[in-house]
Length: 427
Ligand code: HAM
Image 1 (cartoon, rainbow, N blue to C red):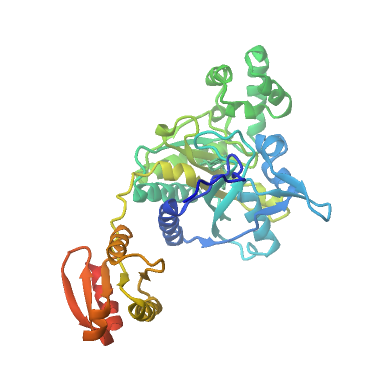
Image 2 (spheres, rainbow, N blue to C red; image 1 turned 45 degrees about the vertical axis):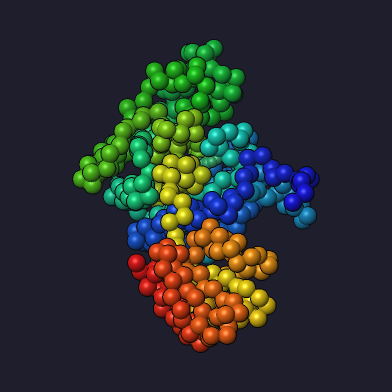
């Protein structure tokens, strides 16, 4: 083949997911869907873009996402739109717009798909990345928090993620968070000169964001800062205490990380992250928490809620390497001569219509090279059709996994292969 000189390259931070990788994505998505459904979640699909205002109000004006990371553009109707940087605000918007929460009680939905943030790309950090997220709306009881955390532990264990750790915190509510903010701001103000330039701005605009800064100087300052747990009001303290009791009951391991705040403003009380320490700087594989005020801030009734999102790319690199190619299914029809090719086309059509993976050569390969291809693509059977077979009315069927072969009457080929193939799959 002549050398290729592609004119275009994909955008940095927005990787392609190639055919060889897609199988892993599909298997993880299928497992996640199954578990989410077992826990009572239904799927919801919202658009990839929304009005910019939704994210500004939902996520919070002073957050890094809104200030620096949104893909915002004006459409031809001069409306400001934004590619969704996360799924919670759109889901609440859709639930309210379609009156999904009017029956009261617990409402559970999940979603999957691409999200967009203009961050500096690095290992594990992309500009287009994918989340599997879930929201459970309508219940304040910490038993729901425990159930959500249990779901994630169950999913990670089922997928075989090794070494994951759950970090947990409570960041209070509208009654006690101002007390903490005040104490924290006073503490940081006194040591302002140690902050990075970004955090000096944060100190003026949204001081709690300093807790999220990754700069070494800011992190060591934060390590000595007052803890939000000390300023929790009685209700938040009871909620957090009860959650920890329930996690004990369900045998879920966690550690309290009192400086965990999360990068979105809607959180109240429970905040959590699942980290995989082996991933380096971008080690959060999932994050979430309660947002007991978000629904009413977005114009709905006062309804508590909790949710999470898993970062698919980070989850995938946390999984054990799979054995490649253990699948031996389907039939490859290897042919010699025009007449045989024509018959193979009909047989393959018949097999595909009965749900059997089947293929044939369309490139004029030699019989030997067709056999090699069938082996490489891990077909369980090769059906050999040449002049001899057409003459005798018997085709040769080779079991590629076991190496045996037998002769079968051409008229029975499709039916035999359909039943053989289903037996092969069951083996
Ligand atoms: P988040 O912590 O911003 O939360 O994102 C959740 C997960 O998405 C992260 O833990 C990470 O695995 C992945 N992620 C975030 N940014 C990137 C990136 N640039 N590249 C690769 N992966 C990334 C939320 O989005 C909330 N909506 C979660 C939630 C749902 N809270 C309540 N309900």
